[in-house]
Length: 346
Image (spheres, rainbow, N blue to C red):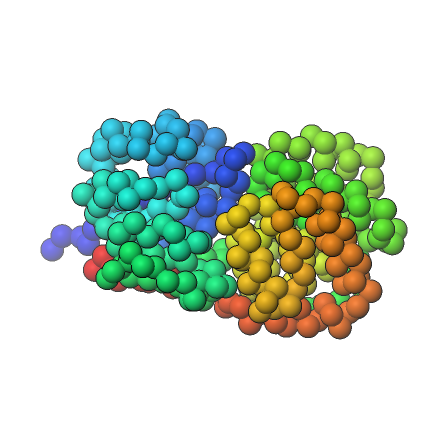
């Protein structure tokens, strides 16, 4: 009797200074859940820098050496790789995809896409929108596509334990995380603002990705300010969040990891695809959405600083936000997605 062949899932995503790391991070969470259930995942990325990052995390990865902004240039290279891997399903996470791109991949196998804004169905076989507002979205072109919608599908990394966080009496550590690139330097600007207003006993931890163009400036700030601690490419993010009393985060996937634990949070956004998420958390949880930093940096900076000070001075406010955040997701979204993808193949 022949051995059962493991299904191959091809994951197409990118990460760099322009895109940040959110696409790669959420795909790796899903990839890990798939491999735990016996699938083999291979990532296809446009650039070597993303490929190196993926391989460091233990996944198979092929670098296309193409322009991530123009995905139709990939087809010749993808045709070669399809012969090698014979994927049974595609998982695609990109805002650059087109209907034509999806159709080309469907010539090989079914295509599932990750989406945030209900603008990218394009006739895909499946759509994943795990956002806090996802179950309210309508996909007019989806037809008979499989739709996985809502925060129960949020692909939180498996290291994040559900409900493990307890709000402490006094604030000692503020953590700032603005994504893998933070080209607007929200992290550094906000840190300097908080240093002027916070009590001396409160430290500030800055979480940065390797693609942050302002990293050297942040490291210099760390040298001059003993209260500032810069951490790059953090492996144990859950542990750093657990030690924080308040987190200021960009409105990205980290919001769901924070929710799984229940860490009191203030958020902002700086690209349009984060706006709905920030607004959704503000509406459902009652946390502070400071607004669009790319349009009104001074006003958003002031609002974030004031919201942090309010949390520092009000333990009951922190407890209320923590309790309501824990209601958003149970942290098992990646497993739920993996279950659905493998069931679709079978």
